[in-house]
Length: 329
Image 1: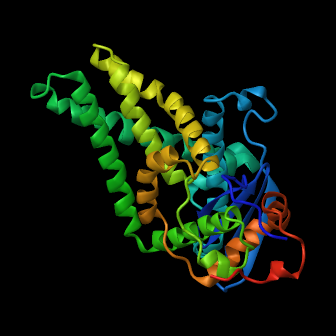
Image 2: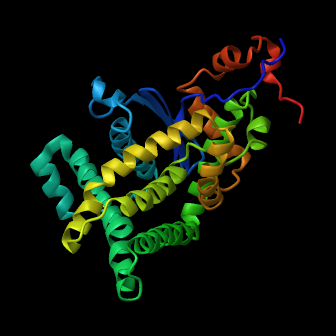
């Protein structure tokens, strides 16, 4: 059967690169596939319902983004820890802190540690990307009297810090491989959403950039914060800092809706325009993967998502042997 005319379509799956592996998630089901040091592939498939599961709150626009962002942090930390366990030093000894945590929290020690780690990470991120730019921008107060210009300067500093952070970590050797897996994750999703059978050759020639990427989300956060801080003003310096912290959930909620819209209207001119900066930054956070990385990514996708059914429903393919062949270039 001939393919139907292509249209904006999101397959609904998302993912994350982990240490020597990839996690793919479809609705409540996720699978993380990791290549162990000996080359063997291991897979863990579980359900993650997230916080506020079943609540109507998670369906409210601009509010749902806050909880989805927290869920992505929790699941991302969980899968990253899972992959890192295969690469821990076997001779590493249990520390006193480990023993104390196990004594206090028993079998919940790992979850407690993860909760503390996520909390500290959020505090650090808010301090670096929200509060620090305000104090640096405030140094220009003696030279610039216009509050709108000051807000723009603060925003440029915030974006500059974010880009510097991305650039620096992209230089790390271990991160380079994670970015290659990140590219494989994007390529798989793009391959499916472009109506191509999920084979190694098709995935390899798909784009490694995607509009629903977390990198684009973070850049949306930076840009949305610039706009909000231009219009929301207070005179008290302390309250300015407090406002920047309190508005973080609001900024996350707005950014989520923007990236959700971008993912389902990828061919719209305006979407291409507002998504362009995030796509440019993805040139740093994704790298071209190897074929074995793509094979691992495909395995992760197929554990949670029936791509053949999706392509049949969306593009009108017949379910025949042609699924097993690559499309001509």
